[in-house]
Image (cartoon, rainbow, N blue to C red):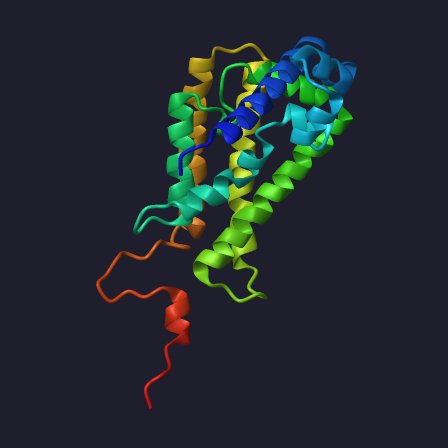
Length: 230
């Protein structure tokens, strides 16, 4: 659906506020900047800021919703025959190769990480983001495999995938914060990531493949509702 003028203006206003806020946070530190200062610099009211962002922490993590959903989305959009681990692996390396932000391996992550470490409030919010990301992935895996409510497998698999991604991201951040060259870090992370996903695939790699399309394939709901022959 084509974006309307009203939606575009709202999106642009939200992005402008977030960009202004991030510039102030990176320059002066998260705890040293007030929402009122952000509003003033963005030429909007404080109420307008809170219309777009529930909390000050959400101003800093303005892509939080997208970040929380990224692993679940990779699984939902996996290719025919591709497992959950294979889908996340492909998405991870695509982001690594392009320098995309979504796995935290882009330029400027060192200053972003430093600001998080300086703020207890941001550390708490990042931990909650990680919890929500794992929960979303687990729920998606449960839905995609039609798991029983008492089946812990989706949560166990989600925990392993999230732990691997989190470890790789933190390794990148630690190396970048130490001032190492980004290209060298990416090459090193690639080796670690290959090993990490190999380990996942040997353990849970066959879990949750997308069915190959077939002429007689039916949605799971239709299969469940079809009466058994007598």
